[in-house]
Length: 244
Image (cartoon, rainbow, N blue to C red; front, side, top):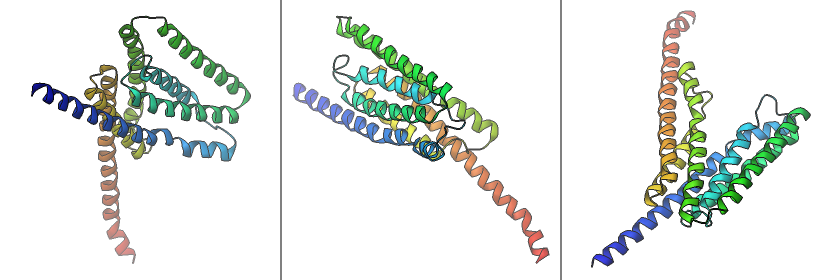
């Protein structure tokens, strides 16, 4: 009876883990697709203007490290981490190449060098970790690298959060981007919990908190702006009436 209960509990946990991972893969597309309007503008104007290509190169490195952690050679039970970061790497590489095509010559060389450095660093991580015969040590090492990379990625919205609070405006914090971040992070936080993997649930737990904070700020300052606009209309109403 105890064996049957344990088997049923394991099956339920595995199902919930897979459901959370699949949901995280789906929500991640919101993040992967979010730069498309920017690149439509770049292609249309044939110029990168004041946009920076560095976030896409760094995101590529993050995806490469995390997909290696999710590979069977490192962790055999994180296939959904492998899939989401494989797709993400393709998107980020595509964005980086498009950016490089349309940037001026001086920045083109710089971006090409940085892109080569990303793949060189990833190759060092892959080859170096494969030299570690102990599979658990290899998993811990690559897991720490992926965790650190994810935390730095999730920490980047702190600048936007500070900007929103300082300007009291959500102009530079798109709602759907914040929502996608929150939903994806929450899904992979649950995935990591069900999989008992701190290298997944710790950084995504931080991402969930930051994503929730962004949504809360968006709601607060959007409602505040709407209220101010309404007050402004009310204060103008007597003038409108008097003039008519």
